[in-house]
Image (tube, rainbow, N blue to C red):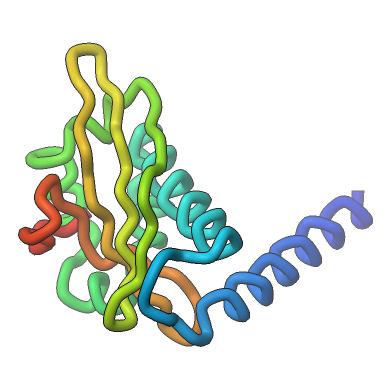
Length: 146
């Protein structure tokens, strides 16, 4: 049992190192394959936590900048009020991932029973670690936090 715990810790540490290296320098343009995989995994983990209403975990995927301006209660309110499709999603798919001005934009198609919503996630990499800054259904309106 101790070996399993040690193995889990080692995997987490190694993946954190990989993530840090992938985001130390953000060049404008399309995300690299490694960057896109890490971004997809980060957003997936947040969406899955929201769908399970594990608010503390979902909030932990937000960037430090987001968390400094929005507390967890406000986060829960925003998600419930404006992003119900994330809570009731029937799956999601990742499309374009781009980098511009030190920000990562990931397009995500969210499937529900009745329609497909497109959300644009904006992420930052503080100290090489990803965090969600915002999400919006309109790329030019990335003001609503998710």
